[in-house]
Each structure stands twice: as C-alpha cells, then as structure tokens.
Length: 293
Image (cartoon, rainbow, N blue to C red; front, side, top):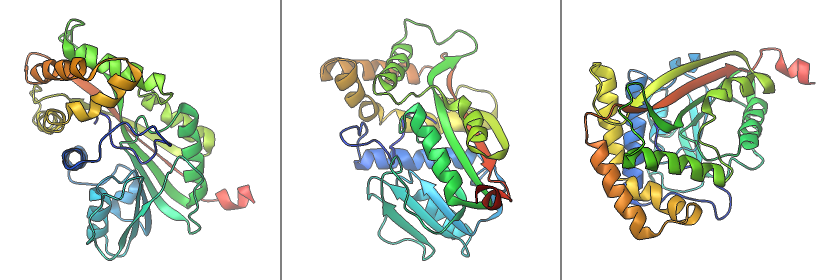
C-alpha cells in the first residue's frame, strides 16, 4: 500500500516517518501485503523466476531482499536504505548498504533487476525521472526495473468515503502535505510514461486495489484489506505527526485527536475506501549499450 512508507530517500531534514520498532513492524506487514498481491511471488516482471544481481531500493527492514536471496541462492541481492535497521544476520548472498538513492548512484557492476517499492513521497516528480534514468544506466541490457507503489488519496466507488469523515480529511491532508514538500503522492499512475521517456521498452502497468479494511467480499481483497488495516491501526500517529505539524500547521494534540477519529473510521465496515496501487515495469533494450556508445 499503501500508506506512506519509510523511504530510502528524504534528503537532509526531510525524514517524515519514525524508525522505531512499531514502524519496522508496519513495514514487515506491508511486505506481507505485497506477497499476497503476487500470490507469494516477488514481482510481476520476468525476474520473479530469478535474477543474478538484484538491487532493492528503499529496502526498509530488508524483508523482501532476504526473502529473494533465500529463494534464489545463486542471486546476489543488495538492499539500500537511509536507515541501517536491517538484521545483522542475513543470507550469505544478501547485503545491505546505507545510501541516499536520490543522489548520484555509485554502483559500478550492473544489475539485471532493480526493485523500487513503497517509495511514494521519497522523490520529487523530477526526482522520479532521475531515479529511473539512473536505474536504466545501472541495468545490464535486458534487465528490468519494477516499481510497486500506491497512489494517494483514498477513494471509494460507492460514495461511502464522504467528506465529513475524519478518514477523508486525513487522507486529503496528507496528500496536500506531500505536495507542500514537493514530493507528490498522487502521480504513481504516470510512471509508465516516464519509463518509456527514459528508454525502457515493453513497459507494463497493472492497477491493484488496497482496501483500507477487510470490507470486500472477494477473498483475496478481503485478505489484503485485513493486513492493510493491521498496518494502519497502530501506525497512524507515526505516519501523520510530522507532516501534520510541520506542513499543515496542526498541533500535536489536534493531530492525535484526528488519528483517534480515523482509527474509528478504519474499523467501520460500511466505509468501502481503498488506495489504488500500481505495479509498473520495463526492460532495458538488449541493444542499449551499442546504442548508448
């Protein structure tokens, strides 16, 4: 989903999410959410069947990187994040690095798969394009970049997410706060066009729904909704406080009251709200090196 994720790139003084144990638990829940989306797979692109050299941008707790390394012992997986919150003991073919992927990349050996997941609000609109260009340059010909992310704000198809709800106000205000810091949360669906612009081919885009709670009748969506709710209920304050107090001029007390009201809405099965999510991937052309030379 999803709700705002702990990013690998915020820039100095722009880190808006906590790094405490509760936030790390939330990130692990979100990793499980994506596993449900992919039916216990790792991605949509052909590299779900295994890659040789993998880069996981914004690795967070490193759960995805370690799972991929365990599944494919012949792969070498590198996870990168601003925060060194990954475990000390990891698979021998997995390594973690502390770095800011919003700056110039320094990896010299090419990758054949780069994953960028849950990085909403980590880049400016121009920064997303720069990241994709750097990913293109860092891939070997035939390699894949895949982006898995959400789009804010929340929406509903049946009008149950009404403007008088705290949940509606919260979602809209965090989206507005993202705009204020120049890191929009509502442009995810445009990334396929950006991929094509920087040179990727065979670009594919799939839309996914992340219900805010287990309200859907569809068993898979209900399961996704249950885990989305589990990630939200304990993490609302951590997701909201910095953005609301720094960017929206709310007091801590006002924000805490809003979060309590949002928590009630998240437990109301009559509210059929969801986030749109997108999985977008593209391939670096096989003849790219000759063309770029």
